Amino acid sequence: GNPVDYQAENATITGGVAESNHAGFTGTGFVNYDNATGSAVEFSVDAAAAGPANVVLRFANGTTVNRPMDITVNGTEVASAVAFGGTGNWDTWQTVTVPVTLTAGTNKIKATATTANGGPNVDKITV
Ligand code: GCU
Image (cartoon, rainbow, N blue to C red; front, side):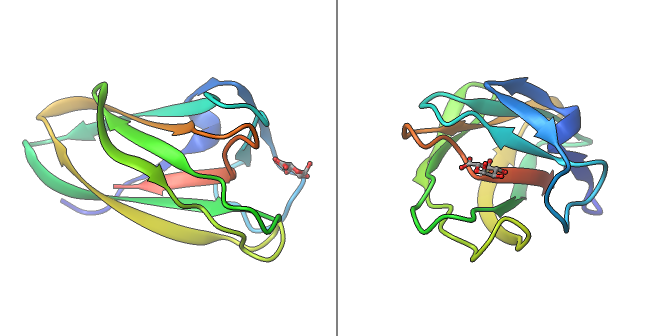
């Protein structure tokens, strides 16, 4: 189907806070992950039918240090330590695409930081 946006600030945040103090976000803000391993955002994504999809995650990382995250779908890891490198500053957003397989109905897509720096700032995913 057509791509749908799922805003991070409306998702389930485990170790992080919704903020809007950097420019360029969509929706009403973004999630500032806690600077801690295991900080996470979980999105509920509806799929009309089972099958492959691309998860396009929009992020900013104003540091020069990679902020890797594991991606799980319905509890199963589908991508390990995906790189979210520096974007130059916290107002500059880039996307990373992760191919996944969805089930029909609601899918839980979770991005979990794997280092003590936590995740990047996350604006949204588009699926
Ligand atoms: C700064 C920045 C935050 C960011 C944080 C971090 O505080 O303003 O938006 O999340 O650095 O390093 O994670």
